[in-house]
Image 1 (spheres, one colour):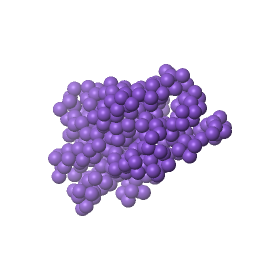
Image 2 (tube, rainbow, N blue to C red):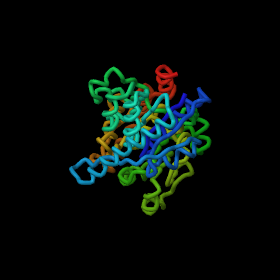
Image 3 (cartoon, helix red, strand yellow):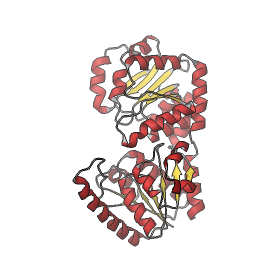
Image 4 (tube, rainbow, N blue to C red):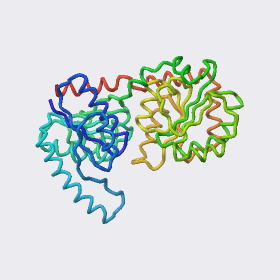
Amino acid sequence: MKVILSGGGTGGHVYPAIAIANKIKEKNPNVEILFVGTREGIEAEIVPKYGYDIEFIKVKGFKRKIDFENVKRLMMFLKSLSSSKKIIKKFKPDLVIGTGGYVSGSVVLQASRMGIKSCIHEQNSFPGITNKMLSKNVDFVMTSFEDSHKRFPESASKKLYLTGNPVRDDILNADRHTSRKKLNIPDDKKMLLVAGGSGGSEEINDALALALPKMIEKDFAFTISTGKTYYEKFMEQYGKLNFKDYQKIVPYLDAMADNLAAADLVIGSAGAISMAEMTAVGIPAIIVPKAYTAENHQEYNAKSLERAGGGVCITEKELSPEKLENTIFDLLCDENKLKKMSEASKIFGKRDAIELIYDKIKQECF
């Protein structure tokens, strides 16, 4: 077997592709795997670190307004189809998997045109334009949110399979008591984790103005990941507060698995992978979707979890220090509410997502 995986631009497209590649390789050591991406995307740096070969094509997404630049990008897209065809003919894959981003559009479309079995994995509740278009051509579509199914074209309805987003083993296997011991968090303390995505969230940071001093006063444990860009500004404002050793402000969160396992409540953005991690562990969440994401997909992700009962969605437009403070303390001071939200979050989450993804691929191809 030979498999091509293509997805790029952001970690949300690349890491699921790597998780899928790892699982295929684990189950079938002799499978040959090739990634296809762009030199400008994050995949150019990440994929080789995981020991996989990668080929590059040139492609950019279209602008959403009428612009002469789109003519150039259309020409680039047509050339990318030709480049994809050369790579596919040379590698001769049995299966091509797309995990999102414009690069996967070229590769998966060309594979389907050439009669090669192809599929896509959609991470978000609101499918991207590329994946909605590809769903008409591919053999099957793996989804991560049940309510995304109504947003695909009718012609793809019989190809849709709910699998969820793959979650790293260290997050699935972390133990609450052991993690709290590592982080010096007493078992009797309520713990809040704030992680507004890998780059942080200035909006969430600013909205903590009332809640943070009160959390120190109430002696709650917390870890706040500000994002590297906003760390100095945050510490200028709050660095003189009297923190305990279980009350941490960090620019970037390395120990995500331990912090999630230790937390009673998390505040975060609505990136698909972040939400998959929260719900796989069953942590009640206050979700602040980032505005201006493609198709506003983060708000759709957040609303899906809120409807399921596992989180509270506060849009950036609605966010204020008063609202965030009230929501934090309303939840952390109500054990029954936290328990119900945790149960709903676990039901919503897909701990076995990577197994479901592999089983579907195996059923179709192996």
